[in-house]
Image (cartoon, rainbow, N blue to C red; front, side, top):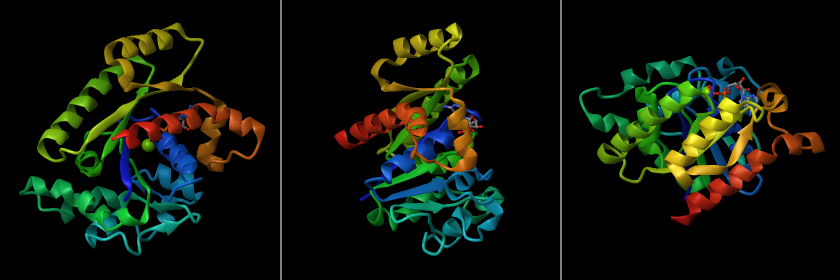
Length: 254
Ligand SMILES: Nc1ncnc2c1ncn2[C@@H]1O[C@H](COP(=O)(O)OP(=O)(O)O)[C@@H](O)[C@H]1O
Ligand SMILES: [Mg+2]
């Protein structure tokens, strides 16, 4: 039975998609993984498949429309499957009964049939506290939140954690915070360091020990796809492989 983990924060450009994609890549080395794109920008779809989001006719939108993932999943490799997204996702509201909060269960219900085929289902959430994010959190067993080490992202973190608490109380009592991942750290900038220290003081061991540094090679992965064949790639991805180890320990403990 798959463990469902989402990656979120309502701010764009904080590394959610990059983290979801790289985590899917590492987990798929030894597990069956379904990566689900919940952002109409289709960045995860592009990163993992190398194809434009408009190349996909069957996406998360159709999966929700038919209440079934069948025929909507793209097989990228034996262990790594993708449920892609494109702009259609902005129309999912029209598929749901807006008169009841039960509508937020829709992704949880849709993924239920896929759970037995995977070890991990990873959800890349959009950069807003929108209905799509609420649907994603309602389907999650765990959520990882990003902390980009800059002031606006720090403020966004509090709002995200509050939203998680509301979802946990009202819609999904199983939702747990896997942790806060610090990303895009510029290790030479003292402001980045002091934000990291403040978050560690405030949130203690909720913060993952692994810290993802800003590296140009990681940025390139959005174009090349995730690869770790060369020593240089392995070095660039080292902090991510440490993070994935930490994540696996945290989500399997319970
Ligand atoms: N560790 C990193 N080092 C350098 N660039 C990164 C890193 N992580 C992400 N990026 C780049 O930052 C931008 C935003 O990342 P992305 O994962 O798309 O964020 P989000 O999904 O939160 O909007 C992208 O161009 C991505 O390639
Ligand atoms: Mg994104």
